[in-house]
Amino acid sequence: MSDADSSFDTIIVGGGVIGCAVAWRLAQAGQRVALIERHEPGREASWAAGGMLAAQAEADQADAFLELALASRALYANFAEELRAATGINIEHRTEGTLYLALTDQDEAELEHRWQWQHAAGLNTKKLTRDCTRKLEPQLNDKLRWALKFPDDHQVNARQLTTALIVAARQSDVTIFSNTKAHQLLIAGNQVHGIVTVKGELRAATTILTAGVWTSQLASTVPTEPVRGQMIALLMTAPPLRHVVYSRRSYLVPRSTGFLIAGSTTEHAGFEKVTTPTGIASIFERSCEIAPSLMGMPLLETWAGLRPKNTRDDWPVIGRDARYDGLLYATGHYRNGILLTPITAQAISELVLRGESSINLEAFSPARFAQPCSA
Picture (cartoon, helix red, strand yellow):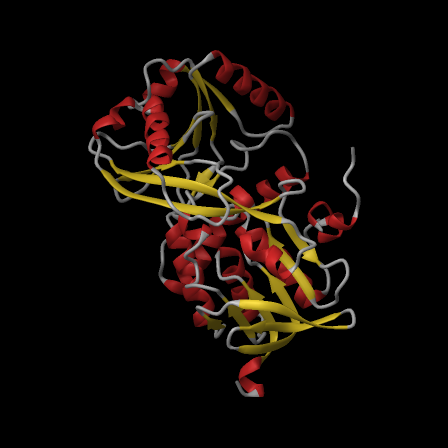
């Protein structure tokens, strides 16, 4: 590699939605950006995701993470339009909202708790009777007791989003190194100068790790691990669902093309990105609990992905490294990589371009890993 081919303003390691979105934003600002991906861009956790923008449906309490999730969700309508204008790709931002079902006593207790704290926090949450819920979605189990509706929890097509971001990055002249494994950071003193790859050294003033489950292989101080999620897609032969539908055990995501995504498992299986008969059967069983009419519908596809989980506190890692200058992180998004893509790209690009971000990143800073765990 010549010096001209190996020198950049910023190097991004990891080609999922987060890495591609950050690369796009930086290239839009005029930076010379390299994106390094160990396989093909976008074909790991991003491709496997369901695409729910479930800031409220998956929240347990009002905290800094919820604030970040809500702020990112609010960016999505404009983000989708900007991507469509730039690439011509529709990421299928659908706004019907999300239903969360109570089918058992335990479900009712959890949903009542969720209703109480979200209502108290002033969030847009609606409590629906059984009849009202089944009027919205007649395919739902007739054992339904009641439901919560989150009108602002929307969805996108994760694969369309991933494709659009890759195209946007390429069109903005991001240099993409596919099938290029990163071996180690280039460090001198307290400064990171780039990355050593299987194809040689790449140098830059700024290096950003967006490597998902592989982050810890490059920076052991940020503890990330893979959590496998298996998924299925069904062809909807009955009247299709319109809303994303949750229970405590499963979720269903309708697609505009007439099929339905169902998921998901949560498995600590290392880097084994494979489906299993047991996993697929369990998803199908729990999905039919939500909508019994799925029982006879054709199975179109099965797949698995590896979610990047931060083992310390489950929250993403976004910000500057606590020890080395020139090193930033945008990783560990676990179940929320799609949801948090717009705001992570905004926050990281602001840090690189302006030295500070308009987003409060204190709770997500890599510096928290330098602190001892509380008892």
